[in-house]
Structure formats: C-alpha cells, structure tokens
Image (cartoon, rainbow, N blue to C red; front, side):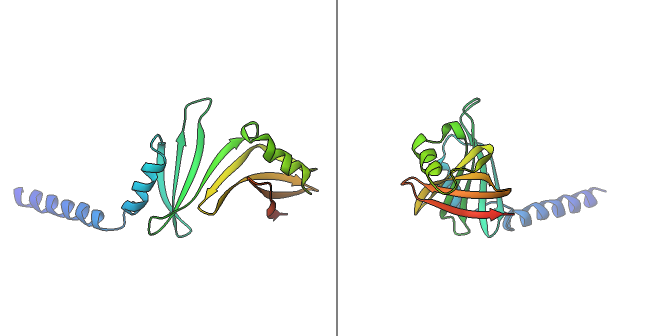
Length: 153
C-alpha cells in the first residue's frame, strides 16, 4: 500500500513538473515585465493567447473612475497596443469636434462608450456609430484625422 501511494505521488509530481515545462498559458517574461512596468496599478489581470498575440485584460482605478483595458503583446513579448474603454464624457471635446465635422458627424452613437487606442505608431479614439441603419466603427486620431475603420451591415 505504501508503495502504491509513493508511485501515485511520483506520477502526480511528474504531471505537475510536465505542466511547468509546457506552455501553460503564461506569456514570455519580457511581456509580463513590460506589462508590470507600464501598468503598475493593474487589477484583475487576465492573460490569454488570441490571434497570435498575448492579450491581457485588466482594470485600473476605482469606482466610479474604474477603467477597463486590454493590452496586446506579440509572442516575443513586444507591446503592440493598448485599448481603454472610455465613457463619451471622458473623450476630449476636440476629438468629438473632429468627429462632428467629418462625414460621420450626422451618425448617432451606438452606446455611450468609446475606446482610446495606443500603439507604438500613434494613438486614436474609436467610436461605434449608427449611420443609415449600418454600424460603423470610426477612428479619430489625436491630430483630427478621421478614418473609417469598419462598416458592419
């Protein structure tokens, strides 16, 4: 009986050791370190692999100023982008003015949120709009360039 218990314990330990060596859902150390440096106050951190990237969902702040974020890192651990959900009231008026002056100015907001997207090449805001019955995702750069991101019929 003692021998069976020892064998089962050894098999169980080998299983855990094998899991540690196997890609167990933990991103590379470079991504974890960069994330911790960029977002030291992050809470409710959840990592997952998606579309060939490491995506980390997390929160910052406290209610009512809590913000939801997603940061994306490539498989080598390089930061690619961060998306932050914002209430429309938190979007700078200048950005809303750019949108209103564009060809999408007559569209209505699908909800009361926007996203602030940061990338190594620049930052922009994304709005979900309804125009002529279609859902439109429109990006507005910080310098006022308005880009149709996607039309969703």
